[in-house]
Image (cartoon, rainbow, N blue to C red):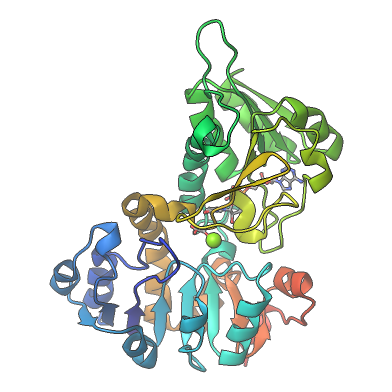
Length: 372
Ligand SMILES: NC(=O)C1=CN([C@@H]2O[C@H](COP(=O)(O)OP(=O)(O)OC[C@H]3O[C@@H](n4cnc5c(N)ncnc54)[C@H](O)[C@@H]3O)[C@@H](O)[C@H]2O)C=CC1
Ligand SMILES: CC(=O)C(=O)O
Ligand SMILES: [Mg+2]
């Protein structure tokens, strides 16, 4: 199979879809890999590294999209990339379609087959291609929250860990999954007073066990969150209903109950955000203020630490990438129901129910797409 890896073009996105190690494995299995010139530089990989792995270097994204049977990326295709997608072409990347009607329409119109990293599952009920980036974004969330809390950035002027004689910051983490747990680990490590809200009792039981009294868990209801907001210094949004638009858990009216200069970090922004006032921002301009409350809503947080993130993502995607290349997407998905769960769009149809529901579009079962 011809596999193509273009340079990411989302603002300040320095990750790359394939590492030289992944290219080397694909080439060793008999596939052809083409990589756009400079695609790996932001993550620390030179064109020479890819050449040494047996990949070809091409100058433009047009060359990649024109000849690759499978395009491997990190972020959802941007409008200029969507114009290059072809009927029958396989796209393997993050998509986050539920909050993104324009992208969904373009993918449907292109006739491509698109497998979304974020809805591929594993046998433990996890999301193995989302998890590595959630580990990164979760660890970054208290770090960027602490930065935003600094006075010069519009924040309260509160140090997360406090100092002897002065209380630490109150950090509320909504959603105790992969992002929430990673965020809790760092926030606890920085000395903050941490509360994690979730609706899964087994999840809270796990957190209670591993943190051994270093944080508080609370069942997530509107009332519980309303109680915590007035004293919260930093609120981290980390909920997920897989494939679906994030539920809005803090309304605009509730911002007035918070302290001026308190900070919301909405990690769930890639699924539309879990605070009513969230709108996606970029690393170039990450924060804004609404009603006195600072918001950080970068949809590609792991791009900030592109070296770590590219390696972590590449480790997780490689087995699936190899299955897709070796068997073709139909057989790979027929053999692996977890990979089939990643199928979001095929030949002009939505193949993931939560995406169809969020956007008011008809959808077919992914298993039906295997037959067409
Ligand atoms: N902005 C960025 O750069 C990145 C964003 N993300 C996003 O972060 C979000 C969280 O991802 P993961 O932690 O991997 O998901 P996860 O599935 O591991 O955890 C989500 C948690 O939310 C809980 N939850 C669901 N509804 C809830 C509610 N109403 N209140 C409280 N908790 C609730 C679930 O029980 C689960 O424990 C996703 O939207 C993901 O796409 C992930 C990586 C990077
Ligand atoms: C998960 C995601 O959207 C990211 O890593 O950018
Ligand atoms: Mg995203």
